Structure formats: structure tokens, C-alpha cells
Image 1: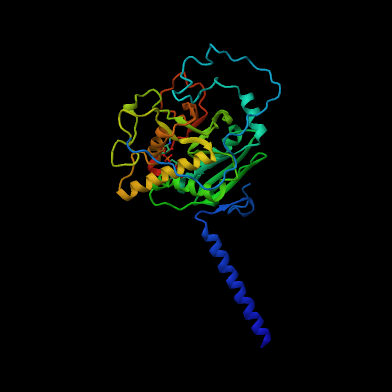
Image 2: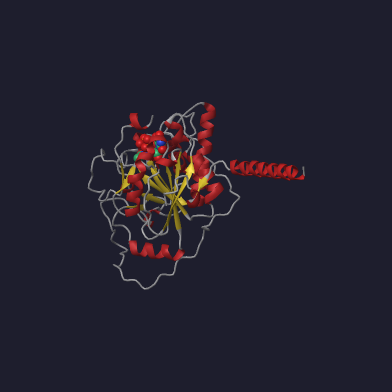
Length: 355
Ligand code: UD2
């Protein structure tokens, strides 16, 4: 009799523990599977948008001291001559515009290495878009942030489709469960909310910088720490010579993404942007809230989250602007000024891949 009672107590305890574990597990809005727990074990004026105060700490603090550099030999910069004269290298709010030939990679690398900083890359590969991962990751391992700490965070609903890529030293891959959104537009509209939650729950202390990218892309030239800064956004390859009235901003006043015809600096692409975790958090949260407000009003911005992203950057100006080298699209006329196409869209059949 006593034996049965002990067995019953044991079974009840185990059931309670399991229920408790399920409760804790589900408590997180999103689930990150780190290396040992990977699903696939083989894989190593419009009205101003208000940023809200945040109440948790980030790894990278503002006002960090400048790096002390070792003795280095390099070509002296000139106070009179620009490194590039064929393009604009500075915005009117003193953010550099990053073009090939405008920076010294060795100096930047030395500064960055001293801080031992790490960079997270956020990628969405939902539904059929997992097919783009192999080329994306293989080329990233050849060209992206070489020699630095890199964490890939891949949102997917198809973990079994994550390719088995050999990552270099100090580079890690994390798989994050994504909803299988019914409409492809909802994948885009929810990117900001998902980035916000990922930072809140996991990333505030894990990495210093974050880069958000499209997945239907490949790296074709080096991309390094020249893209990092408080907030860096890329000029869309289709609009770098357009007038602001021709930018495809959201023009309906009812949307939170509305930008009037007489405003606008650049049309930025949401396919590649970067910043400190803190700035990326503020951007994602602000855009996610604007998207939610639009949803309540029953309106969807013309270019999905990219419209809200452009609205945000108009009022919270990026501290670095990346030239279209950082998002190139081959049908675009091949102008001389874009000397290196570093990050390129991979051709796709939208009708087939989005459904
Ligand atoms: C443009 C922008 C993109 C976004 C979008 C908004 C460029 C190069 N890209 O891309 O950043 O602002 O317009 O309309 O200008 N995705 C999935 N599964 C899907 C659909 C999308 O994972 O079924 C993810 C994936 O990471 C993809 C990204 O969303 O790269 C953007 O979707 P897209 O490439 O289909 O959108 P596109 O080409 O219109």
C-alpha cells in the first residue's frame, strides 16, 4: 500500500514540475533556441512619433571613452581635399554618408577591436524564404564583419530548413520561432514588433550592435564596422537621385506613416539598417506602435514597415547614412558612383515565393 502511495506522490510531483516548466517556457513571447537546444542540432508632421523611455540596461553605454590607438601609419587626411568629390559624403545634420573610399578601414577596425564589441544580425526567413538562407549565410561568412564577434538571429517557422553552414570562430547562430503568418504582408508588418520583443527578452545584454537585413540578399564585397554607429540607414538604390516628391513615402494623412510632399531627406531601404541595441530598440518599438495604431484604424502603409521606418528616420535622423552600396538591386541603372555593390538582392518570383 505504502509502495503505491509513494509512486502516486512521485507521479503527481513529476506532473506538477512538467506543468510548471511548460508555464515558464510559454511565458516568453518568443523562444530562442541556443546552440545546444537548436531544433536542428546539426547547425552550428504629420504628427511626431514619440520614442518612449526605456527602463532596462543595455550592454553598450553612451558616452564611452574614445579608444586609445596604437601607432599606425596611414595616408594623412586633408582639411581641404575630399576623399570623394563625385558624391555627397555628409548630410546637413553632420552624419557621414558611407561610400567606398571615404574611410580608413584599418583605423576603424582598430577602434572596434579594442572594445571587443559584438554584432547581432536579425534575419526573417519565414515560409518559403528559408530557401535564401544558404546563399545569405555562406556569403556573410565570406564578407560580413570578418574577424569580429557575430551572432545570427534567424526568425523562422521552418527550423528543419536551416542549412548546415560551417561558421567561422566567434560566430554563432540562434534560431527563433516565428509564427507562420498567413499573409506575407503580416511578416513585414510584424518585423518591428518581433525585433522589439527579441531585444526586450534576450538581446539587451548579449550584443552591442544590431543589424537588420532582408534574407533574399547576398554579400558580394566586404561589409564591416563602417556600417556601425548609433543608427545607420541605407539609401534605397531606386531613389538616390530622386526628388523628395517622388519618394514612395506614405501620402495618406490617416496613416501614422504619413509624410507630406515638402518633407523628406532620403528614401531609406528597410533591407539593411544597423545601430546600437538601444537605438534599434527605440526604432523597433516606435514603429511597432505606429503599425498597431494603423491596424486599429484599418489602414496599411503603402510599403509596409518600410513606410513607418522612413517616417521614424525623418524625425530621428540617422547618425550614419549608408550609400546604395549596402542594398543594391540589379535592375537599377548601373551608375558609376556606386563602385562596389556590397549587398545585393537575389532575383525572386514574388508570386511563387510569397504564397
Ligand atoms: C522591400 C524591402 C524590404 C521591405 C519591403 C516592404 C528592399 C531591398 N527590400 O522588399 O526591406 O521593406 O520592401 O514591402 O528594398 N519575408 C519572409 N517570408 C515571406 C515574406 C517576407 O521571411 O514570405 C521576409 C524576408 O526576410 C524578406 C523580407 O521579409 O527578405 C522582405 O520581404 P520581400 O523581400 O518579399 O519584400 P521586397 O522585396 O518588396
